[in-house]
Length: 64
Image (tube, rainbow, N blue to C red; front, side, top):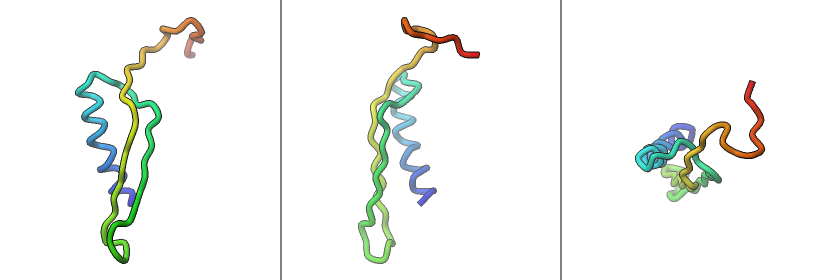
């Protein structure tokens, strides 16, 4: 299952990077067995690609 999760996250990361994003907001994963005896697993990943810049908000606290 760890391998399936790692592979499922690889594609969204590539897509987000292609859009110029450097982070994801609200990322969620879901697993479902779609064959008898657990022989096939469906892994769904959803989230929103965002670009985050450090120290740009009015409430920014210096990172030490």
